[in-house]
Image (cartoon, rainbow, N blue to C red; front, side, top):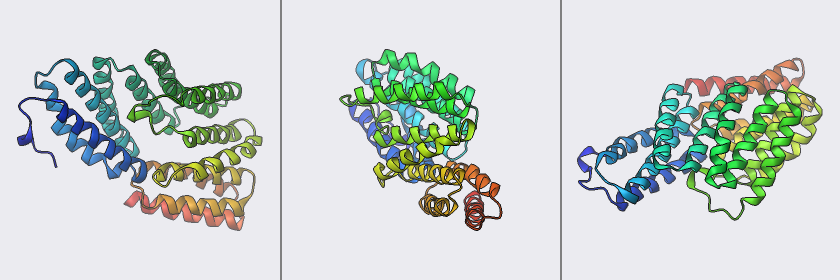
Length: 318
């Protein structure tokens, strides 16, 4: 796809724009089809792009190149994480962080802290996730991006909810909502542009879902309309996010013992997840399956647990 023979003798804005354009296209593939749809292409593009840093370019070209390649490493790290390739993910995030710092791009640096925190959050390391989000916050504030600050506060709330810290979770999410409202006029960078109203509402739903599991089942009642709204607002190009939202919605119906509704929504989650090349979609189904198995003997719950088991087995073998 990218040949070292095509390495330019002198790097200019056209080469940088090439990296930026392809990174944006690969990010779109990741959003819709999962990390497996773009990771190999990210690595191939990096093999072509990384040597450009040694071309002797300076000034604005070098600065923009550092940001572009940092963003590409950030995407490669995210795609690797999505596929369950943790060692690769950490290597790419580390490289992205170094280049973001070298370029002085604090907004990108904050975004990398957010993504590293999400890795910890996915593996139920809520305290480590919270530390990553909190490290990113002053950097996001220094960048002047209210959207970056909103993203980190929203994810802080999620980590607090996983820890059962009810008051802190609700407080931080309220802050994220306020900051998101203030960020509407911002020209968001590509790596933060994914965070729209559907994402904000979705994290609110995840926060209430976790609080229903760690604090009080009453939060399932408030999680359901939040997740329903996020699902109805999210576009078709965000299949992976829709899969996560549907799985969480089904979980809340199970918590409320509304098993027929849980089965219906769970089946939707499985259907949406089928074409997505992502290990995380399978991982997100695991707690749903465990909750369905808790209601063993209920026909709808048993059926959902069986279907989830078949899906997770087929995805794991894929």
